[in-house]
Length: 171
Image (cartoon, rainbow, N blue to C red; front, side, top):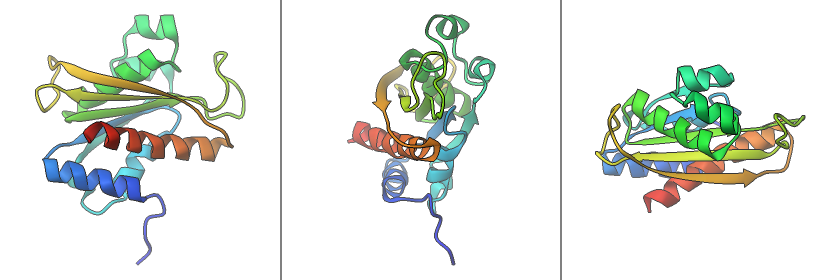
């Protein structure tokens, strides 16, 4: 039996901790195009905690699927902390999860909207009521990253670091 090459120790710890707490997570991903969900989903038992995910590579889908406000996208653009925050809330709301985690950024090799490759924002959202609904309030955290490497390195580091950020937030 071959081990999932994406299923690393941070994801294993996240699944174990959320399982212990009886909580769940959902993702909203742009630059990583589902890689974050795949990392979490590669852990045995992930189905108990991973509610689902949104792949919102296109800017219009950030609004249409994840609920990012048009004004946020117009004012700040798709690669911004404010956008990451709303993506995380949207993931939690639309998937009915305790936590939402989002990633938006530039994997490269070229800049996008004036942002250099390696510019990444991770959004975290936690439903105050325990599980997200359309009317739930949220605590949020946004982490900006400046990563180095090629497209794969940036995407992989984004996912690994975002899982670490959620684990730190759970502590």
